[in-house]
Length: 478
Image (cartoon, rainbow, N blue to C red; front, side, top):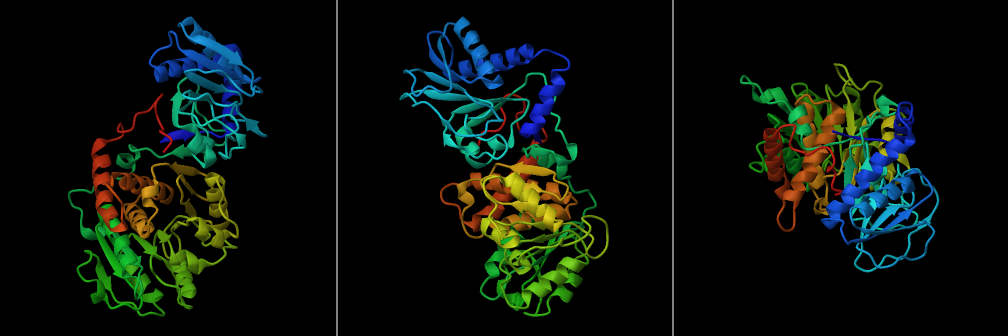
């Protein structure tokens, strides 16, 4: 995982560093890193026309150091203040007007045609934590930041405006102010670290999953979730579809189906789950008037980790109290719950939409519910009740089609059944789900996704922890 530091965290990093060395030394290293990235973008500095927009703070100081380094390499460099309305023609604009702590509104100068933009820390005008932009920032091709990215580079407007995010090593430790509320970005190598291989004596029940999903006319959602779980490595899926003849879906998946009546289905579902290692409830479940009571019984008595998705979330209604008092341990109702809302479902659960700050939204839902909250989006944030957050940026618009969320719930269930802790299981599933969507050729339909999930799991498991480059060139802003 790649650390993600809030603005407060970075302030703390700087304060600790300044106890051992002067500010000028830190600025010199940061400015040199900016210049180096500018040279990489342009393929050299000699003869290039570069304009540095430098503000009054440390961000501007970094830009001014970069300007001197670039000039020494033969570039034609001009440094201007952050309040200019226009700049001349150039090869590269270096945006060092305002950094991560900026509040207010920033209107960037008119951008000359054909110029490229390199931002320092964050695109000026973007809030470092929320990613909300104000005014008229430039859209950067790359953003060079130091120590670790801030959340605002990975969510909200900042994700779109930052371009490729380059984390430059300037010999400072990425230590959050509050380690218990740390934020990390999930990377490819995390799958091999978290998803352990099955042993030579493995059997199908070892990673069994109970899935309660589907209803008359909605069997497809159940089979998508089951297929997602199986492609993610689950040993067996026991599938119950309330009010639906098990023979209805025969042959669609390898799931072992069991019969559930349309009402009072929770006791036999819980009995089926007693031999499984995790449970998923909700995809295509329907909204019968008895469903909320049945879902509540499952929440209170599920024998292990539980994922609530789609109609399972609808059944909860507005959350006003914690779903369970504990998020660990053994026995009925003792395991963790994972909630997986999209924006509309979040609004129903909480009473307001999540907004662009996905970190804050996920933390809030996790706090009030006592569950692990996975808030879906182009950036998916997963939080546990302690405030720990994992971010996932692998998703794409290809996944914006009916049924892909059902596949995700199955993948989460599979990783829970494999013994991965709930926070990590949900985030890893979202990362794999996003990577799978990017493998699709042409238009993706949900039925294509389980097989692609299987490809991603196999590829990342075999590649090991070194599959994602670390260091200066990390997150690509997508």
